[in-house]
Length: 529
Image (tube, rainbow, N blue to C red; front, side, top):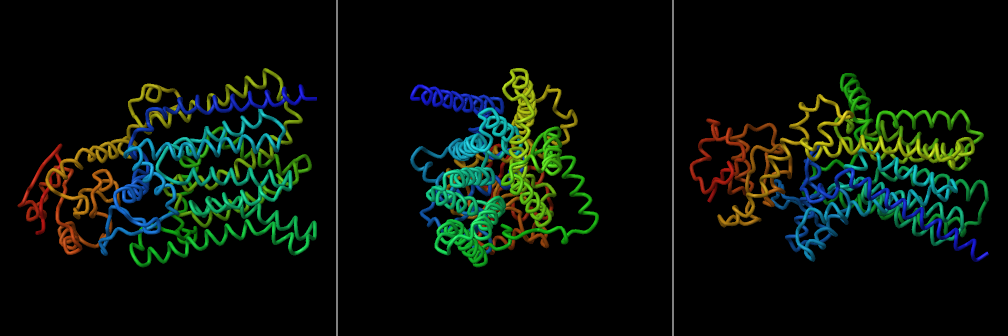
């Protein structure tokens, strides 16, 4: 008996080792060992720099955890604003104080959380399907998602929120199988963390909570104290998330209340033309960022087959799958207007695809020859192609001259038109990091308010220079000259121009009289005493 247990344990350890070797190999294919040192870059650098800005302000200023700030200071000149629960930004700032300010620390924190989520998915799938092979199938397929690959190695909290959701689901499954109440409380903790990072990622737990409550009250007719003990973790999480969002709403209302949108953007706010534009863009572009075009449609066919062959499906998994489809559809409708270009909003749909995969593979494993060497080789080749496809995209998004990406047969050859969106703009902004030490040499303190132009984002140029002040964001009803005059009244003292073409603008010549410095085609002017 002991010999059999030892062999089983050794076999399990071998599969865990294979899993981690696979994750590390895929990460190398994605070039993470190079991109981990990079500042915010490529698509949605705007939103990436918002996260960076929060971390930098925690790092430099002795401010409370409950008073996050960004570089764009606003009318009240304090920069106080909040998006999601700032635990990651605060943690990164503390790590910077210990090890120095490095971008790789920020990225590494998110990567480690992403890896924890992938490992939890591996363990969860193994528990559900009793197959280590399928555990690897599902986790590697999730890691082949361009969304997971790009934003898992990034400055946004969306993939960490997805990862903590998966970990929470793993603890719920342990409770479901063992009835150990401690697992339910661990799940409650991760529900809270998920909701605090991204409330919209809570869909999976709403569904699980519904099933859990139905099972306790309707099917088992449990006593009140039993129900209360089983529901408390859910109530704790709801209270924690609700309290945070009430606080963040009040915090923004008292400070900068028009930038971070904490409410849905439903489809009925759009006209027919915009709806058509978003739908076409979703199908042609954004949906393929969830998974490759091939895998995306395979999973949709899997969902249809789950419905058609519902008698073969595990009842719990099928219920979860169908309810996730319903809630994901509601989320899609409620946040429809956010899908114009914001691909990271699609991350909250990923749990539906995971549920579909596991539900389908759980019953289809009785048909497929999973232990056959030929089948496993076919899977490995298919997975390699998916990972290669994503690796090409990710490498190109970080470096348009990467030879693996540039000369790949899977990359759309009409990518030159996207160079500005993915690269040129980012590279110009990232060069502003060289301006920071020069500003300090001019006795311009970090807290001295500047106007950075041209930059219609909130924090890109300001966070790259690590300089408080204003960009050209906001005050859209004013011309540039009037906008500068307004910002001077709000405390701006210096004007930083990082596009020489702006120096030729006739209306701005009055602001160019007192030039105090220039570096790398970036001109600095004093515009107020």
